[in-house]
Amino acid sequence: MKDFKLNFGLVPDSCWYSNLRSCLPKDAWDRIRRKAYARAGGKCMICGAPGQRLEAHEHWEYDDKTGVQKLANVVAVCKACHEVIHIGRTQLTGREKEASEHFMKVNGCTYAEYRKALGEANEKHRERSRKEWKLDVSRLPEFM
Image 1 (cartoon, rainbow, N blue to C red):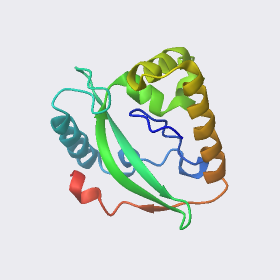
Image 2 (image 1 turned 180 degrees about the vertical axis):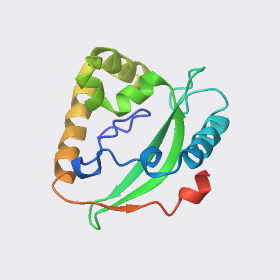
Image 3 (image 1 turned 135 degrees about the horizontal axis):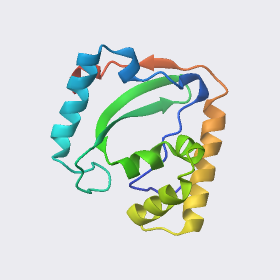
Image 4 (image 1 turned 60 degrees about the vertical axis):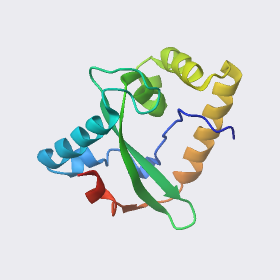
């Protein structure tokens, strides 16, 4: 698979609706997201676009052998990048066209490369959704 700057973040089905924002007290999540915004310096940490309203995104890594979903980072991203990352949700809201255009612009790729990357991400999602995942948030204190 080609290495892109902006990628899809399709989480396994068993991990849906479990995120830091919903699991932590509001003040803790606010500290984490504000720290990400400060690190971003007013720009999307993926595409570099200046953003008056950045969104905090949890980046997870998956160990397919051990079944561990590990918090890798919390980054500040623009709405357009966030819509690409969560392409499944974006498709449901009818904004896939805008997201695909943003993906191609940020990654300097063609529509065919977008479709190929999306197909590979969907296949990985199907594989990962066949099992339950253990959560590892051991890096959480780094982001607070």
